[in-house]
Length: 170
Image (cartoon, rainbow, N blue to C red):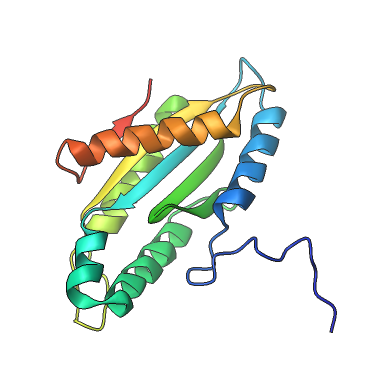
């Protein structure tokens, strides 16, 4: 059996989402294809509020179940050409070809889909609180690293403000 070495290490082993490195490459390509005066490439960084506490209090199996449940909801909530990836202890979503208003509506829809229903865990259903950071860029020469940093910074602001909210980087 041959291994496709180009794809090894591109997927998170727990959730099946792409790794941060694979997301970075996708973002670079999407930014390079975007036009300076066209739709932007949006990145939504998603943090599960209290995931560390859940893991510490109830173990890795509960945290893993939460991550799997979130990954499933994210995949179900997106367009075919959007990409879900792992970012730190949470996730990120690349929304290529999205105007600012579309990215904001998508972030609000994702926020609702994550918090509206409890996720199944070994402890039983758990309600989630999630924070989202939203950033956008466009045009060749834009940096995936910088876009990821801006989205993560917006996420950190959302969590510092009490969590369960969306903060957009401007």
